[in-house]
Amino acid sequence: MRNEKAREHAKAGAPALRRHSSKSASSRSRSDITRTLGVKSDITVTTHENVYRGLRDRILFGGFLPGSAVTLRGLAEDMGVSPMPIREAVRRLIAERALKMQDNRRVLVPPMTAETFEQIVFARKTLEPELAARAMDRISPADIRKIAAHDKAVDRAMAMGDVSGYMENNYRFHFAIYQKAGAETLLALVESIWLQFGPFMRMSYNRWGTSDLEDQHQAAIAALQQKDRRALRAAIGADVSQGMSFIGETVLRRSS
Amino acid sequence: MRNEKAREHAKAGAPALRRHSSKSASSRSRSDITRTLGVKSDITVTTHENVYRGLRDRILFGGFLPGSAVTLRGLAEDMGVSPMPIREAVRRLIAERALKMQDNRRVLVPPMTAETFEQIVFARKTLEPELAARAMDRISPADIRKIAAHDKAVDRAMAMGDVSGYMENNYRFHFAIYQKAGAETLLALVESIWLQFGPFMRMSYNRWGTSDLEDQHQAAIAALQQKDRRALRAAIGADVSQGMSFIGETVLRRSS
DNA sequence: ACCTTTCCATTGTGATCACATTATCCTCGC
DNA sequence: GCGAGGATAATGTGATCACAATGGAAAGGT
Image 1 (cartoon, rainbow over the protein chains, first blue to last red):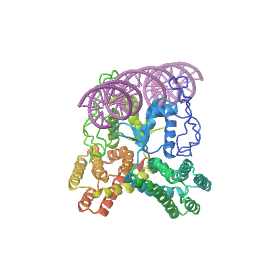
Image 2 (image 1 turned 120 degrees about the vertical axis):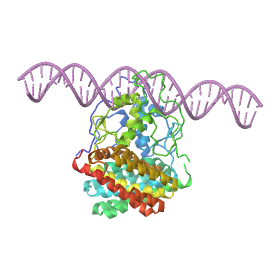
Image 3 (image 1 turned 135 degrees about the vertical axis):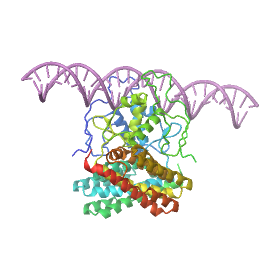
């Protein structure tokens, strides 16, 4: 099968050439990444790619708060690389609307507005049930077990009040399903959407906690087992609604 | 009003510093661009931005054919700038899925597959009628006149067999409507989608001509005038269906 | 005290160089 | 002739430097 990208490529940074910051480089471990598609991940790819994934995970799993500034040299220092791969990764994330460059040319994690929020909800409710429905026939029992495992991890994290863990596993739960649809084009739209509400999700959970969270994951898993497409659509739709209304509480109070 | 980005900034290229290719620089005139949002456009922005717009227009209006290779240094030579702003523009377009980097690290205009095509149709039929519906209440009689003018230009181009002119004005017709929705987040999704089928559209028209094209623009304009939201949704949906089924003819024959 | 002005640190941008990898073409052996 | 192998050109990537614009702080004047 092998959907795409199974590159080898050694490269990655010409260690003898680095004469700038030192800083011991790799604080970013590049395990636990996995990426959107189920690629097994073997050898290092480009520095830019690693930087991109690192930033992406931070945004998606709560490493950044909305409104926080992002500087090229700052990130370069943090990650122990030259500003160049940072520039490309940031440019990419700006294109995906995960970051925003304001007129000042300052880059920041975009704040949320009620209008943007409403559009995100619409897009999610439109696209995610569709992706799930398309995925259903391609999901094997083994896949369902993996999906259920993600859900378990979500519950664990929720019980422990581990916000990042919750966000990460919730993401994995959803995308383990969607990814199976084999619909890269639609998947890319949804990924962009998630990148846009990620930081805000964290903010919301910071304020309200994860304890009184409900989700429809169990209903979705049941629907997958019974191959009930209508029920699956409904479960995903309801899950999106619940999750977003929870987050929406925060949006509607203050507009940053 | 001023939706966003009304930068001034002089800059743009430090003319005394250029000691590489000469080539007399600006073959790209940067009039006739207008950009997505209705910004009036006054002063020069960054070189990267100009390069981006240039490439974007080429993709959207038929300047590239699917599968054609794109090299950084090649484009830099063409546009008379250093490879640097090209890199950023290309990276951005890759993120928007307008270009694709294959495992070779070669950049090309992505080929179309039947699967991708189907997803594009779904996304368009889902999002574009919604955008039009949201825009309706914000569209003034003056706006309708402008929209109708774009439609006229479409007809003219069609009659003359001017494929690029057709594509450009068709784009303007649609986005003049959508842009009025004030839904940037959804608009960005649709823009990304258009970038993905642009090159293929050109290919299709090259093969079949523009003469036997029908559209639902008149129906959409009528619906706007009567403020009939249901009819507007239907007209946009039908227009998408017609246009895409025409393009689909080409997709289904050969898979490149 | 408060507002203005000047100065300096910081930021993103563009250019250029060095390098590893990949593609392309040419040549040589059979 | 024709295919394998090696030299050569071309490509994306990362690093580094120079520069203009911006932001913020310190100093000055009223």
